[in-house]
Image (cartoon, rainbow, N blue to C red; front, side, top):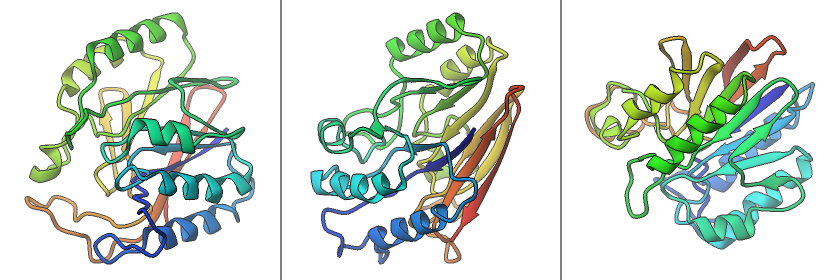
Length: 246
């Protein structure tokens, strides 16, 4: 099972608009053109939030129109820049879905909403943590958990201040279940492949611009390029992963 993660796309209200000098429509198209050349083609797309920079309906429509021709089943979740109603209304069709649990042949993917209305940082509601524990208790399938906000410290003060606030509560649940193999997130506009006990925590760069790693204050990475992550989920519960840059 080959999965491609796209995150922090930040599509603007119109395709001509730029974000800090970057045309995010063009960077998305560049990434999708590269993915379209993959052999074999991905089995599934995961879109892990900040899909539209201001939650604009036309941005979600353009994202739908860009992804659908690839014919790849796609699952989306919220980021702090997204708006729930426009996302659910305009980023859905026969291929694109918004759901919490995805059952594959030998794995399951659990999608968590870590957003808090009006806030940049993330938090998992108690009902979300309860659902996570119940779902992990009910199935022993190897599990990938996806959310927007990093539940780890990245040694960058300004980014760490707006990560997942209750990360300790999150890990307390995950670490009780050895079949949790990987946690996948975005938000930080940079790559980090970390370990939390036996669980891999993978932070994926943006499809548009990247932030300078280990910076105390906001700074763009002058060498950052559009990126996406691939994961190959294997039948024995192991996986391989990498990040590709355009």
